[in-house]
Length: 278
Length: 219
Image (tube, rainbow over all chains, first blue to last red; front, side, top):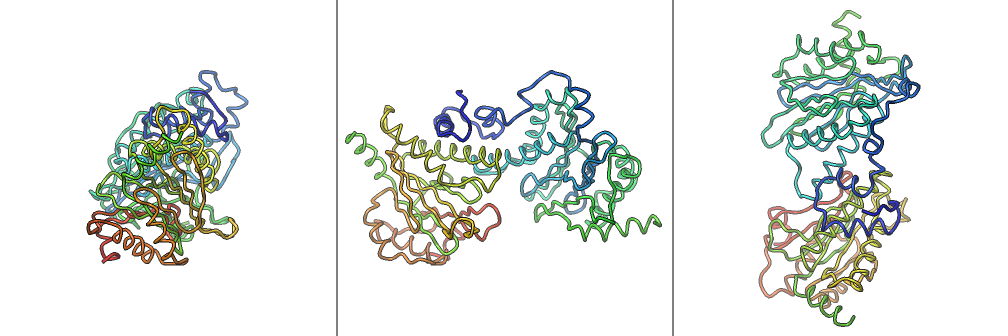
């Protein structure tokens, strides 16, 4: 396939000409065919990352998801670190993937955010081309394939590990999927966490969480786990009541994906701290 | 060249007509379509939609290609950078080249529609319609486009009846009544495909009405 700059008329014509010959509903495949430069991971394989660069890569995190009575909560802290420095205190790590699902990311920040954006575009592209959305399992599988395709960058140390959560409005069930750095996909029972603080967060969730609780209880548990993780892991940020920067909490239920306003998270954080006597 | 034009026109005229009309908050596509799943209209991007008449497999490939072009641009730049004119130009080039060079011309006519939710940005033009013909000719319109089937009498009737700033339901009602007048059989909701772009919807402005939603509007 001849490569043209994507602004050129020749590019548009090559896309138009190939669409009947090259059947795919995958935006990832389309980019790979027509604009591979947009998929950096596939281009530059194998070289170890220079240590001076590795120090500056932004990573570290706690993101988690938990199933509750009416759906699923997905949440993430807001800190991004670069070595010992705090690179960002307001980083978004939870992204809607489509109306009824979301991705949370951990690992190298730049590639992870790109992955979330690519995944959301992939899902919408599929829906427009095919006329219906992918099943929840289909979406989770596609995400696994994208993590696997990221392998060249993973091997250079720029690891990306997502967490995927979704709600099926037809069966009224929620699912959480975890991944490993090379694209393995695992269905979680009722909770999951990834990132540098995930071991601590999972300890809290194992002790405290039950999948039958209501939304308020579930969000409180999620914040509890994130606060615990932030207290143990320097790469995970706790609630910042001074600057009003709080963990990002999202709910996916029969009404779809929605995020909690900072003020609402703040109220529940107050409860969490009050219970700890702080 | 004349034979090719004749061939293409005949193929397109064999199908059913499609009307694209602007209303106060968007644009609506109305056509006769007996299929429940093979559509003539589609979402391309947030504020861009596609409508076609003619040979289904040909316009289906063009539809998918348009979605690809839009998603590539939106991904590499930003969502608000995707607009209808470059897409219409690309279709115009492709159909034009095919008309001259390919073994057979495309037997399709396309309408690409765009709504602008923030008219301040686009100098106050809420709706843009691009009509691309089988030979690549490109025209733009602000109010309506009629393609396919026996388009000319429908176009004349629409020109007389069209009013700017109709509501969505008024526009649908008008289009359906014109199709019913021209049809040789009664047209019910199940015989029609109605979709369009509504600036009142969040982000993705494309909508499609099913029979249950359409029946009360058309009596």
